[in-house]
Length: 390
Image 1 (spheres, rainbow, N blue to C red):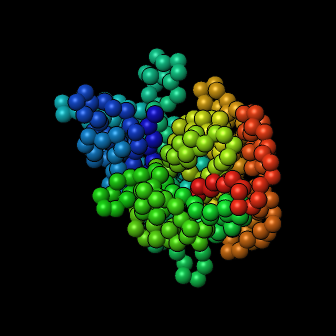
Image 2 (cartoon, rainbow, N blue to C red; image 1 turned 180 degrees about the vertical axis):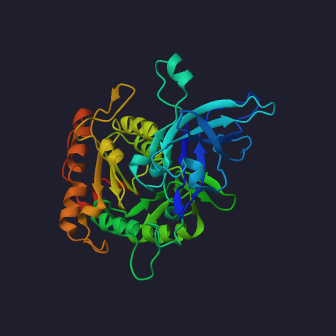
Image 3 (cartoon, one colour; image 1 turned 90 degrees about the vertical axis):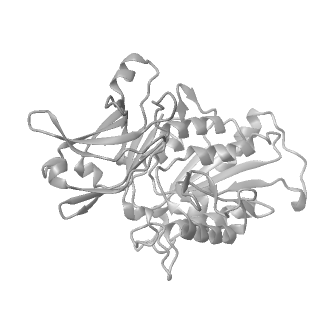
């Protein structure tokens, strides 16, 4: 499965500016990886398609990042924002017999919507779909504004306003202050996902905010905030937005402690875009068998359809026919607790109640299914840790 992320469509009068990147594309070259490029097609009145743009070829990689480009809106859709735009993904070959990886269709209106869950598309290879019964897709495509990735721009949810906290920091402090009281040592491993890291610009989807791979711990929520602010200054935010690496990171810690002495809670703060939904479902299904829960806080104005799906209150999350043995995900849209200006939490008590609403039942559910009996009452110094990952 590959993930193709479109890092924007911003309108500038009749000019569209886009940047695209991909993750885990199909390996097409026998002695190497792939040399991917993209081809954009404008649809015509007679049902045919005309090439209107090609990206450059990125050599020998399954995770290409193409340079930003601009294109007249008229060239892309002849001024009709709802006209079909087709995008093909190819592996470049020297002899011109380029290998087809997959395709998707959209419209300029969809592209220009910006960052929301409706801008996630499946990349399909019709031949594979026809031959393989278990074929799901050849990846997903998502769109979001370039400004959302630049913390120096006021339109970014990560924008560091000197006079007030940004949305991520407010959510982290509001929720973190609530849940940190359930951890005795107040040491929180904190990770970022979706950024280019210094010094070589390597893209990572699970990097310690502390910058220390050997010790990702931060002291208290204030320590997490400090690490977040420092990280924003040093990394370059980059798509696609993959959830599964961080979930699997915490799951590896949880699978080592299944005797009931520890329980892990992963707090994820996101703006709603998710590029690896299939892999994330698999990670959640696997994590449901471990002593861990996941709290997802949605910030910003995006639609959170995918987060609601992961929450599993109505339908249990499944992967290839296998359902999670228990519901371990709690999703909370942070905007529901903010005032109209978006600058202040209206009710900390209600936020605390909703964030923690399902954790006790999830913890007890794990203990009961494993036949783990309650232990004798301990002094506060002997209580087991409820480990928190952020």
